[in-house]
Amino acid sequence: NAGVTQTPKFQVLKTGQSMTLQCAQDMNHEYMSWYRQDPGMGLRLIHYSVGAGITDQGEVPNGYNVSRSTTEDFPLRLLSAAPSQTSVYFCASTKRGGYNEQFFGPGTRLTVL
Amino acid sequence: TQLLEQSPQFLSIQEGENLTVYCNSSSVFSSLQWYRQEPGEGPVLLVTVVTGGEVKKLKRLTFQFGDARKDSSLHITAAQPGDTGLYLCAGEEGSGTYKYIFGTGTRLKVLA
Image (cartoon, rainbow over all chains, first blue to last red; front, top):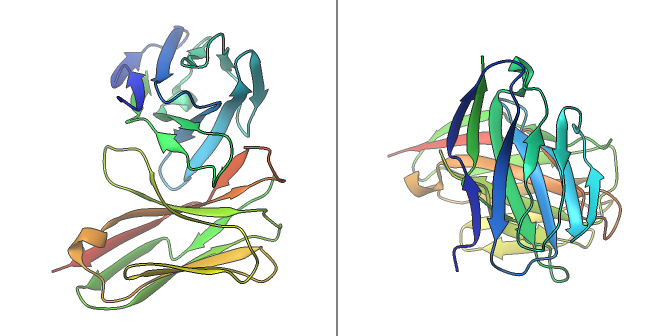
């Protein structure tokens, strides 16, 4: 199993550009989440999904869109990139039940100029 | 939104020393998790505590959940250079929501 994969690993955008960060998991987990990590801020929840077709907002959803058409994929879309969105983005998946262990991907480092 | 504050923010100690990291909130959490993150990687779960007063041990690491489920601590005995990393606590808002709030993190460096 590959676990949770994220692409790209690095990305540089100009202000106003749009892009999609990809996240996929092959563990058949019901739950998936997107976080951003900024220095001194820990991880902040952007959006999450409890199953295909169901998404909800986290702490910092503005400027981001998500969709969950399949169990495996949970892409994060930046509609119009801003310098404040410069961050490291992590995707995580969790199997329902048990202790809700979150399995994280390796992250995408995004810089918006 | 519930907040989780961790202290200290940074910690640099010598190999063999003991240390404690704290995770505090004014809100109640149904469960609390501790993760360790190494540079360039995603966080990896160390433990989940779910019952007030619960204590869990993982080799040299001891985790405690406060009686009121508002705080937690991580104690490391005889720290080793391999313990170096960013330690994060995370609490679940409500129960069964799958909405996790992360603490600000404690960056630990253990010197050989």
